[in-house]
Length: 479
Image (cartoon, rainbow, N blue to C red):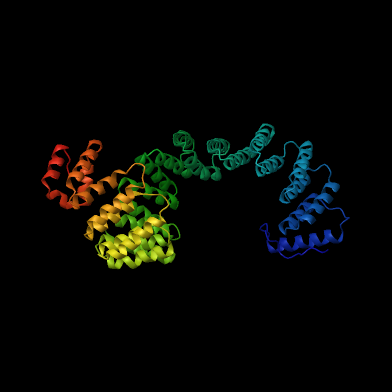
């Protein structure tokens, strides 16, 4: 049967002239199957069939090639690759063993053997195969490819400390290997070998001072150990070496946010935007900076930009709503919170936020409705929803309900969380059960003197009580 000579599904970047020549070659092969073809032509024919997913024809062509060139390991490797694609692993491995006899220095044999062993879940065999290749290979410039393969195996095996070793070995033989440098910081994040990364990259940078990726990895390693100032310095070296590397600006801005330097963070997020296509997460980061600075109008500007890029971005609507809530405008916040809940219906966080907005708008029945939904939606029992709902009841003047809600929440924990106990003190106090309330707070103060200030934050009128003032003085608590 004639082959379909339409363009292959997985084209090997052939230009039109090359493709036409290839189709003529394949037609000639199919019309003269018994004819002799040189090795290069046969390789192209096999590749053509593989690209078109005509694997049986590729196998036949590989057999012809092996018959015509019985001492070429190349065609045995190609046939083994086809067997691998067909998941005929034993046949593939047998062929590769034969290919090794013909050429024990062919790196492709070892790479394909290791790929098959990884597919079979035989990770140690795959590792041993690559280590064997490293020992026998003549062309030292092929070592980086072998160490990268070793990194792939260890990554599949989830041995991230070994991935780190393989990638650093790659860079020992090829310091400009961007693939190894790009993968290193992610590997370090997974293995948490931050100190080892700092040691390696400092030495690496001493030898390669203009490697912006080396500085970038060093910065991330510093972030991993909480050395934020050192990380910022390293990120700024990246910017100095490669001023168009957007990730340095964005990641440096993330660290600046952690240190509270929001103005500088805004500057670097803005620089990142200049160097990349606008994306929603970057707009969110800018909005968060302005929100923290209490510039809610500018925060909304960036949150809206995020929602314009992705109209289904639930977080953008939630954050927009928060800015209005922080300004004391719950009526504007409510429909935005509702939008985020519509987009992510079972989010306990969003449902709680919506309930809080209704509470601020003094629509307490609606608040109750969404607090209940939040409790149903939450995956892990947390005291925050119980506390907020109780405080909503207190704001509504339903003091006995507030205490009942807290006690209901309390029954769900093996050890009552401190914040829930503080809320219980407030509820007991407001319900007129002051003896029990002060017995509870005094017990809490023995382990954490700040519980009294936490209680006052929940219910500021406590400061009108002389006994509360006495407790502040007794435990030397400053508000």
